[in-house]
Image 1 (cartoon, helix red, strand yellow):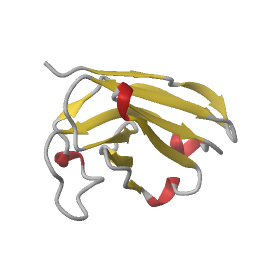
Image 2: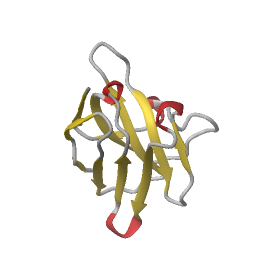
Image 3: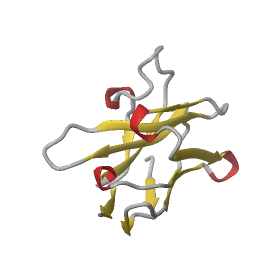
Length: 123
């Protein structure tokens, strides 16, 4: 059974930083982070292929950085210049199969999910 272990959420003031980590036990092609605010649908934030290709949602470009340590099967998300609108539950996700073009930030492309870690940004 595949496990996904997330860590690193918390509460910060606007302009602050956090680092999220997610370790998985399974084979993956893509892995990344999604977020869901109350009453909103889950949206892709940043994803990375095992080969290093990355994709970011437009609102986080230039502020968030995704990286990975393949030896540790771990993906990281560095969140800088945080804004109150970044407040959400952040979920780690992994795909065990190829993802078709331009579907990298779509939740339905991923078949393994973590339990989520809360990020709260106050103004």
